[in-house]
Image (spheres, rainbow, N blue to C red):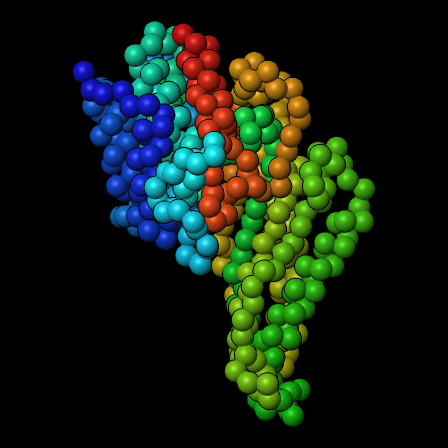
Length: 387
């Protein structure tokens, strides 16, 4: 019989793969698939549509029926360059009751527990199936989740509930904001700044879109928050510009201006409405530019979309997590996860995983041993609940 690894042994192996989003995750995916295969567990890879160095993985254990509980995690991690680590980020180091390493908290700790639970479930008399969904590129826009869900439903009976194991201190998180991001390129027309009225300064026209973002934030903040929005901090949709570049010299009207503009949308507001409002403002500014120089323009490129997660009325996934953890607190978060994709696909969805989100993306990232053990206890109870 193949060796049944402990959660810690699996975690050590997963962290050893440097699966930064810009690099390959295939060695990790292939290791997990080989490990599951050694136990007779069926799994399938979902290759990235354009990058052959990346793939997701789905697996199923238990009866070949619908209604599985999906354990969802991502395999990519954020970079470590420029961070002052005191240990090797791609080796789990245990010290002072903490497991240090890139991804221990976000979210290979949960991934290790999920892989362990799938194998343990395989050797249990499950009445309700468990499924594993390991994705790629979560950290750069949750782009791997939707195609992975399609692959899972192609190969296995459809599940009904999803537990997304982002760090939540093993508490139930039932909602989060959606995310929508654009790369904005304003193309102007260069002239000497003493004749600026004959040119189009891409930076100054781009600033009109940035000022629109400021106006939207002020308007949203001033509105009375509805019952869903009121549960978030902040309790409104935010519009943010974090980076900008452009221009050639101080005395030349800028030919180009590039910046990113991102929305964090409360889940009961319409993404389509916000996109329409933004594009209307873009069209207005572009018309002003083209009245001076017709070939000037503004180009938008969608860089990511993360659906919001709406708190569910009598949600099955939430009820299950509360039953297993005894947690009755209400929580929502303003960051995004792959949970919105699962909910959009018809799954009852909740976020619950070990660790503190404050540790995510930090130098000397860690997951406490106590949280890791709590996660193992949760998985043990989950297997019993499915048996």
